[in-house]
Length: 201
Image (cartoon, rainbow, N blue to C red):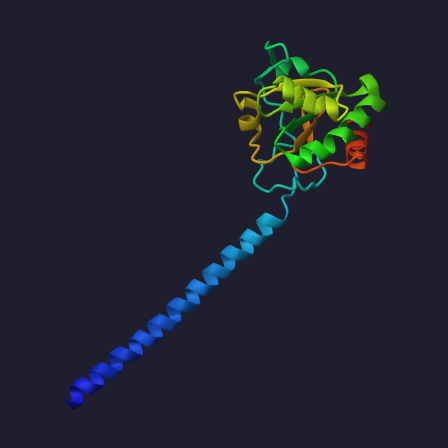
């Protein structure tokens, strides 16, 4: 019986050591993961050549600054197809929006105001993430939008850019390079300063 007690005591001691050690290792791994997650969720830094560090605001959006504008087909308000390749040649501000997006609704007047002030220096294009129905066009018009409106009915542009949240705006140089991206609601001052810094040096 004494031997059995010793064996039982040794077994319990081993179990405690394994439990404590395993728990410690698991807790360390958990801390690493959550720490890494917190860092990832708080900011995404763009460090492509020629692009200043920038927070996209939505960390799950793919980083595309420094890359060429993807070549995809978009749809005009008359239902015709237009390639993004045909947009190259003038500095671009491309804003992807949706009628169901409250921040999109709030930032549209700021985009419209800056576009009105800049005239032909920069081409503004609003890309509806869905179809440009009459109600969608009225939605944009009511916010003062007079710039070109296209739609990404098939989600080609959204997929190519890795967009997972709206609003989403990219600033594209005349040669077709995406020089800045913003995955958050923009105000007039931010739009103007980004255009001045990145598109009209």
